[in-house]
Length: 327
Length: 304
Image 1 (cartoon, rainbow over the protein chains, first blue to last red):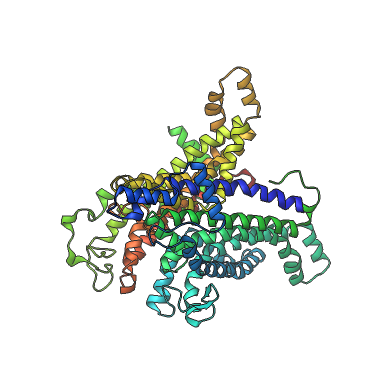
Image 2: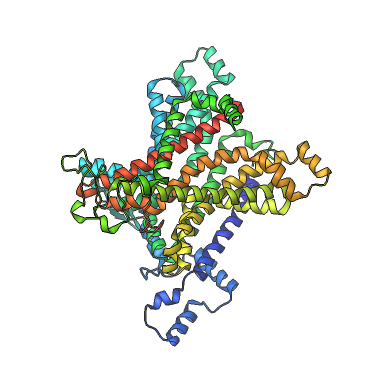
C-alpha cells in the first residue's frame, strides 16, 4: 500500500515539474512585465531598478528555483492587470468556483446515476429512449449555449432566477459562501445545472453501459434464480459492481468541471477563478495565468492520486497479483 | 468509376447507412450546413460584410413570421441591421473552416508522431507518450485557451489580429493531437509485427517507406473515426473560444462570435440574435457527431 502510494506520487512529480517549467517559461519570456508594470513613460534607471527588484537579471535556473520556492509558498507576485498579489486574488475567488463545481458534480451524480440505472434496466421503454436522445443533445450542446438558453427561459422570460453573480454571500473566516442565503442559493441553480449537464449525460451513459454489461453476467442470473427480489438484484448486486468505473470517472471529471467552470463563470459572470483566468488571458496577465495553470495541475494530480487510491480501496483484485496488465 | 460506385452501393457500409434513418437525416443536415457555408457568398440573401448595404433602420428586426418582422430578413437582423440568416451562413463558413483545419492539423501531427512512436519505439516512444499523458491530464479546451493566451502575449496586437484565425487553428490542433497519436500508436504496434511488414523489412525496404506506404494505410481506419468525432469537438472548441472573446477576430465572426454578440441583447428581448446562430451550431455539431457515431459502429466488425 505504502509502496503503491509512493510510486504514484513519484509518477506525479514529473508532471508537476513540467507544468512548473512551462508556467515559469511563460512567466519569464512572454510579454514584457517591466514595461507593463511601469506604464507608458519611464526612464532607463527606473527600468533597471525594477528589473533588479524583480530578479529578472538573474540566470534562468536561479530564477526558476526562486519561482518554485515562491510558488510552493503560494507566492506568485503581482497581477499585471490588477496590481494585487496573485495568491490573494485566487484565494478570494476559489470559494465561488469550488462551491459551483461541487454542486454541479453533486447534481450530475444524484440525477445521472438513477437515470443510468433506469435506462439500463428498461432498455426499450420510451422514457429510456427519451433519456438517451436527451443525453446525445447534452453532449453536442456547448456549455455556453446551455447557459444562454437557461438564462433566456428562467431569467428573461419567466424571471424566476437571477442571471448573473453569486447573490448575497456570508463570510466565514476566509471562506465566502453562498449556501446560507436564499439569493445565494437561487443564484447557484442555473450555473450549477449548466456546468453539471454534460457530466450528467456522461455518468448516465456510463452507468447504463456498465449495467447492461453486469446484467448479462452469471452471478446476476444466479441471484435471480435464487429468487431474490428485483430491488436486491438491481441495487445490491448490479449497481454495486458498476460503481468502480463511475467513481473513477466522476473523480477525473471533477477536473473537467473546474476547467469548464471558465465558460460557465463567463456566461453567468460568476466571480470565481475561471472568470479571473479568462480576463487574464484577454489581458495577457501572465502571473495569474501561470499561477492558475500550476494550481489546476496540482488539483488534477491530486484528484488522479485520490482516484487511484479509491480504486485500490474499492477493487480487492488490485490488492493481490499486481504487476501484470493494467496501465 | 461506375464499377466503383456499384461496389460502394453493394458494401456493408452503404447498407448500414440506408438502414439508419437518423444517420441519413444527419447526413442531409450536415450536407446542408456544409453547402450553405461553402456557397454562402453566392446563395446568402445579403452580404453581411458589405457596409454600404447595411441600414440602421433595419436594426433589431425580429424574424419574418413575427408581426414586426420584414420579409426580406427571414431570421431577423442584429444591432447593425445585418441579416441574421446571411450572417449565420458566413459564420458557419468560419466555424467549419477552423474546425476542419484544426482537425486536419491535429490528424497530421498525431498520425506522424503516433506512427513514429509505435514503429520506432524506444526512447522516442516513451518520450512522446509521456507528453501525451501530461497533456491528456488537462481538458483540451484549457490547453487551447493557454496556447491562445501565450501566443496573444508574444505577438504584437496588429500581427495577432491579422493571423488570429491561424492562431485558433493552431491552438485547437495542438490541444487535440494526443488522441490521434494514441490511436495510431496502438494500431502501429499491432501492425509492425505482422508478416507483411516483416516481409518488407526482409527484402530491404527502407524504414520510412515501410511506415508510410505499408503501415500507414492499415492504421488509417480508426483515424477516420477519431477525426469525424473530433470535428464536432473542434467546431465546439472554436465556438467556445470565440464566445469567450479569445477566438477568431470580430471582423470574421464565426458562429461563436455571433452568439457572444447576441448574448448582450438577450435581456432586452432580442433573443433571435443569439438563438439562431446557436441552433445552427447545434445542428452542425449534432449531425457531425451522429455521423461519427454511426461510422464508428459501422466500421467495428464486433458490433455487426
